[in-house]
Image 1 (cartoon, rainbow, N blue to C red):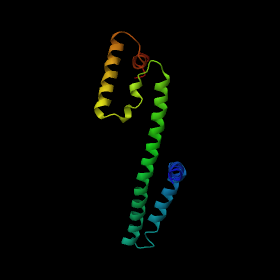
Image 2 (spheres, rainbow, N blue to C red):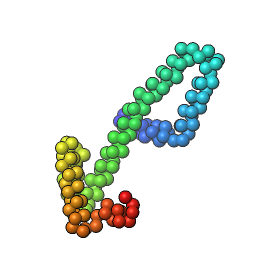
Image 3 (cartoon, rainbow, N blue to C red):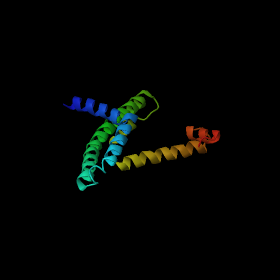
Image 4 (cartoon, one colour):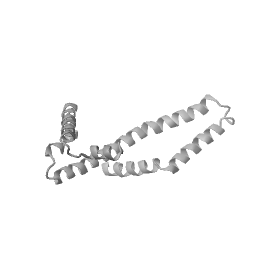
Length: 136
């Protein structure tokens, strides 16, 4: 069941994120707006679009969240593999996304301090190289 949901959610996310889906959505709005004169711009006419968009929005929230969760997990696994493969990398960062906000703040402060130290000692960091090249 979960595999079927994963396949379906991936397929729907790709379809809904396409330009064709945007064009279809625009066409639906245009048809709905044009049909207003035929239905006398009644409350029922307005209810149709309101209900439709509410249902679609509700379902899309869960679909987008599922897709984002899967993408974030895949990205973290790729980063974990890179950290594991680099000999100078600290293994403590492999599961840092599971840490608390305090853990993340501490790691960020360490990187900030290391970056300042590297800049002060004249070691060229990627950021300082970009600044010198005029890219920042």
